[in-house]
Length: 171
Image 1 (cartoon, rainbow, N blue to C red):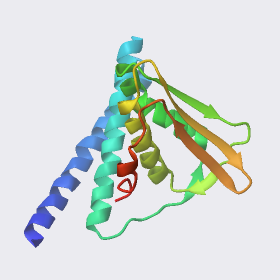
Image 2: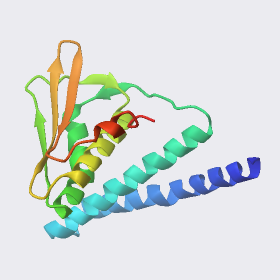
Image 3: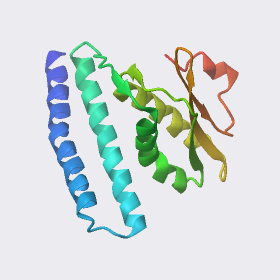
């Protein structure tokens, strides 16, 4: 009932502050250059992006509990988005012995879209591609300009989605 919903919202709200503090702390560590070992720097980056990802999810839960999903359109610059995705998922790809690549066409325009939503969609698609990709294969995020916008593709050498499951993807 209402009490359970209110408690869930309070718990989610309580998660925001520690996550935000973790992100700030990791940013300060990165900027201080106290961590010089490449492996530790990569771990710090992965932790930072995962904390950011969790904060986005927490904010989504709050938005859904409020009964609305707000779209905040703004400029979406694909090379910046791709760099964030590589930072978030690069460590996961390396752990699975999968190469994560980005191919941006020569005319990739900045478009007007909600960058947070596009980021979450692409992160989910890429994470699944990495999860099911065979070892020593490549998952590629590709983007190129079109007459009226931007085409974004994810390519992998995984087994694909069985035909029987394709209708359930967006449920």
